[in-house]
Image 1 (cartoon, rainbow, N blue to C red):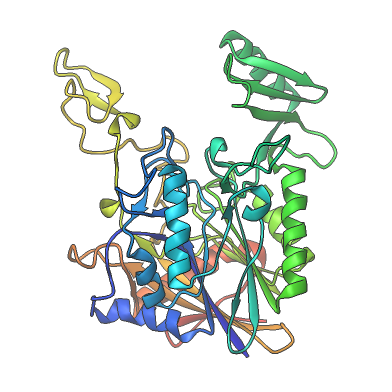
Image 2: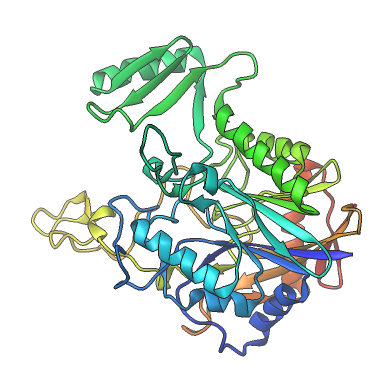
Length: 442
């Protein structure tokens, strides 16, 4: 048997290896106890004075930079394999990206999802455990388009960046026509391509959004760009030929717009099944910040739509260049509410960032705010036998512990597992609560 532990994002920028809180150490024991432990690095690892490390003009919303020692903390916690493709991987430009790679390599942590060009960003990473060779392919659907990696062409070297899974917005004909008319009135550049069109601001011909009309195989909503899908499926097949088990990861913020933030979008559900058909043994999506999403078992393989951000301390993140944050405040001149930048001296109440109108409440809107650490147990021939799901919540008692995951027990644990069961029920997945943990038997 081989046990593979999985976690969502690591969003924290301080040391935690000195913490002795037993709730936190209970989580660490699970990570260290698995044969292979996978996690997602959300951001960059770089010191501010390193070469070419400066905040990008467009971050992934905030700018996330961990100190140079952070890779050591990941190794201490028990991680063996990291995904890196996300909307934050180039928050500190190419210098930050290079420093991140250097830190992960120094700690001996294989990573996937970013590279010196697009081909490299799609390449699998491998880790050798005592029981199996495990591969990882990492991608992202939610990111600034400029951070996408590009391959060499016509003498150019290519561009470092992330393995992006691009999306196309598919609309009903009436909505499509209404959008086209509105875009014309807004001064957008419109290019018609049969039943598809691209929109971009005047003069910015690489800053495009693609739209299509519904049709055979194209229901309303978002679909993944087929070229990106096929390229990632090819990477999975390569990984499967070279490893015993394959993990496919995608960082995504999108949701099912007919449901809620706790529901994955159709294109992620479709892509997950294609990835498993291509040879992935585990599919894990994360990044929704709901916090939790459900679990599906497809053809005997697990799909985790989001286990939640394991480390999550927004107060410890670096937030430079706050003029990028637009929020409501009361004008000191007129006394009226207005939209202005969060650091504007012209408005009084700028303590909080704006809350989304849609999805209602924005992030962290799940009924039970918790995270889980699933441990998948495979036998020697790669057959999944069971999944043990360890429930946790973020600790918020002291600044030392704030945002660290802490194992929960008793009624708290039952609440988390039962809630995850509710989220998983639409996929036909049953989760039993036994000995303080969730159990999925396959």
